Image (tube, rainbow, N blue to C red; front, side, top):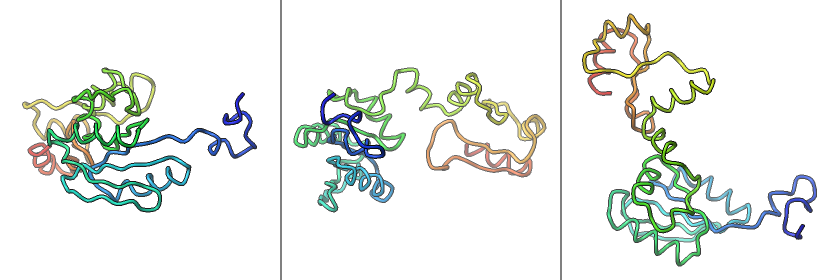
Length: 196
């Protein structure tokens, strides 16, 4: 074993013996990325954060290179990331939100092999459909609450009778609870179905 492998490390120091990586974290906002970026930098990694917010700021602070990037939907985003990855010799690209992951998967950039975590096509489909994800994990023995995919013909009363109240009604897509409603009455079920 070489001197830089974990096998030669003293107990509890294996993390320090792994070779440092050049990482690019991609997010849509700064605040939620801060603790992760700082922890990775403290562990010895070279960390760049690209925030796809459409602004133009850039700074280096506490060992992390922070830079704004074109907005997620902007066609210029991938070209911008191409340049960042080349300039900083990035080894791993870590999308931190579902929206960033799906944007990068759809773009199939030349550095696709650097995306972490790697996901096969069937896994990517599961990320895009929460009900399919739940059905998949249930088929593998993970306990999940009773649920069903809604049809346009479903009415609030039959839904409440079939599953009981209160109900959690959520869209198959969306993040951060934006399309999640808790309904305690049939009237609330009807209102939630109209927006889910």
